[in-house]
Length: 116
Length: 111
Image (cartoon, rainbow over all chains, first blue to last red; front, top):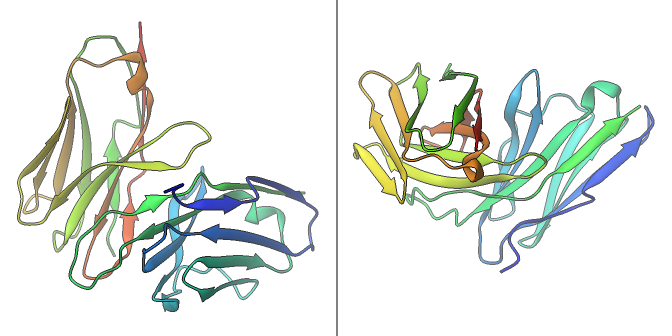
């Protein structure tokens, strides 16, 4: 398996523009996670899905952020409009997501976002 | 609110030394604890996962211990190598899939 795939790997945009980050989880995994990493705040969970359903979005910072998972093999994280303080590395991770199973999460390489 | 702290924040050692990285958490009601490695510009790689009922896990030169009652975990790296240079993160999980990450220890092992 190719692991968790994220695109783009790097994104530079101007304030006010819409940004869409994409993730393909490992085939067969039922849980998908979006994280944000910054120097100031470290690694924070934004939202996670189980069987394509959002389970916990309490980490989503503002209404400007939205995430979808239309099917088991694809998820998007959208920022509209983007702001300079959104600059960070955004990671997607997936896990088997079986109830009661304490398994590990597998991370993608991340998308490095810079909002000017 | 669960808070996870790692000490030291940075560590620089010569090759061959045995190392101990520390992780502490404020709420002992955890399901498991994981140690990850992050290389510059890369994602996270899981190293070890310790269930709440376990005391330690070993993988090669790595050994992780867990003391739930005191809210502590240690990652022991034996005979360190330059290839071990990376940032090491610990993360705890409660009764959901959410992982709460620590602040990280940036390790540099020089030849």
